Length: 278
Image (cartoon, rainbow, N blue to C red; front, side):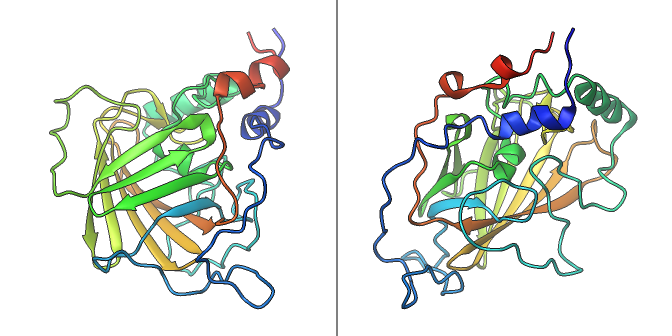
């Protein structure tokens, strides 16, 4: 049985997209720019007709926060009171003491790391789950209406629907569990609060294999403080895997002149070809 270092295997997962396959360069209209044609990242937040922030756009991870995102811009310095920043590889990388694993969850992650993350959904062309998608190096497109926020992820061609039409979450354990769970959102001022439950069991929160179970509830607080930035604070509650709830932050930056591409994972996936794991 041939095994390789964990770090090498996750890098292959991260770079499995075909970088050359891009739309021709297009300068998007209606984007605030300076005299050099550069996007004014600190321009005012665009808003919907109802006055709420418009989250629509093509987004990538902020550079310098453990992601491998394309595009320009630097990560902002974290304020002392802000949640720790999640990285592409590990949700709790910047959390003092790490994630609050239960003994069962600590053993699960240890076992997944020992197997070089070979069962990571990203490596198997399966839906990765909410946190891995947020942290992924490949871009995502958000499209917002008054009653729905749809997110299309280039990675594994994932798509997610967040309903903002006033419906309630289904009771825990009642409907069929889904890869992305069931998500509803409500506005608290300029912050979209999204709650998700009824996820499938045996999920992965990050590349290192931090587990998520069917007992989990995820709360995301999404803000767009400027034209060029989205902040997402993610709170995980999962009594089987974690001794207490915890919160991390993922920052995104706008990429208005880029476009997500067709990404058929089984066609582009190189992990199994390059890394031999029995």
